[in-house]
Length: 448
Image (tube, rainbow, N blue to C red; front, top):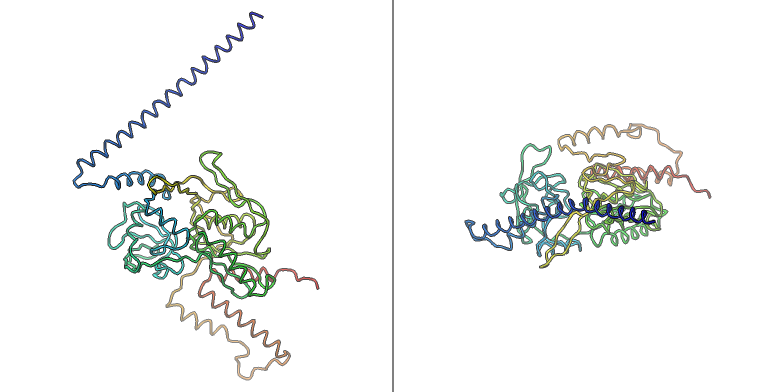
C-alpha cells in the first residue's frame, strides 16, 4: 500500500513537472508576443509625435489618428473601414432608403474605384454609368492611392452641384469623362409591374423597406391580375443590386421557401457562426420563379440567388454575380463613429461559399449590345421575313373561323409582338418571361 502511494505520488509529481515543461514555453511565447505588440505601439506613438512636431505643416491630430485607424482596417480587405461620426450617420440614413449622392455602389480594385452597380433612376444610372466601370479621376483629381472612403468623399457634395468623373470601361479604347449632377437619392427598394401573365419584382437594394415593399407589391399585382391562378409565375430581378442588409435578404428568401436553410455564416471561431432557416409560407404559392442576376448583383442579392437556386425554387438566369461572400458587422465606437469589420463568410444552403466566385446562373444569358448602324438593316430583314400568305395579292381568305376565334388569334399575336418589343428593350427580362410561359404551358391541365 505504501509502495502504491509512493508510485501515485510519483505519477502526480511527474504530471506537474510535465505540465510545467509544456506551459513554460507557451507562457514565454505569449510574453514575447505581448512585448512585441507594445514595442510596435511605442513605435506608433513615436511616429505620431514626430509628425506633430516636425511635419512641414501643422496637422490635425484627430484626423491623423482617424487616418491611422482607417489604414489599419482597410489593409485587411476592401470592405473593412473606419466610419467617422458623419460617415456613420450617412450609413444609418442609407439603410432607411434616402441619401444624397450620385447613386452608385462602389468597391476598390487595383487602387481604383470600381462600380459594383448603378442604382436605378439615379443621376449615375441616367448618365450611363455601368457595373464594372472603373473611376480613375474625380473633377480631374486622381483617386489612385486614396482609400475608398476618401475617394467616395471626393464624389460627395451639395445636391444640385456638378461633378465630372473619368471612367475606364472594358471594350472602350480610351477613358472618357461623364458629367453628373448630384441629387438626393431616394431608393424605391422594390418596383412591381406585370408583363403579360407574369409579375416582375425588381429589387434594387436591401434596406429596411425591401421586404415590406415586396410583400405589398406582390399582393397588389396578384389582386389586379385576378388572383394567383391568373398569373404564370414571378420574375425576381436582382440585376445591379449591390446588396444591403442581411436580415432583409433572409426575409426575401424566406418569402418563397417553405422550409430549409437559407444561409449560414461562419466566423473565425466556431461559436461565431449562425444559421438561418426558412419558416412555413410561400408568398408565390408554389408558382414558378425565374431570378435574374448579373455582374452587378452582390452580397445580399447573392444570398437570395444562392438560397433559391440550391432549393431548386427558382431558375437563375443571366450572368455570373459579383462574388462578395463576406459579412460586415458595424460596431459603434466612442465619439459616435463606427467600425465596419468583416467578421464572417456566408455559405449557401449546399455549403458553398461564393466569395470571389459569385453565383453561376443555371442558364447563361448575356444582355446583347445594340449596334445602331446594324439595327436599321435588321429591321428591314425582319420585315421581309414576316411576309406571309395573307400579304399575297389574291390570297384565299380563311372562312372556317368565327369572329371570336379570329379575335382571339389577333390578341395572341399582339401579345407575342409585345414580347418581341421587350426583347429589344431588355433581352434578359424577355427571356425570363418566355421561360415562365414555357413552364406554364407544360403544366398539366386541371381535371374538370
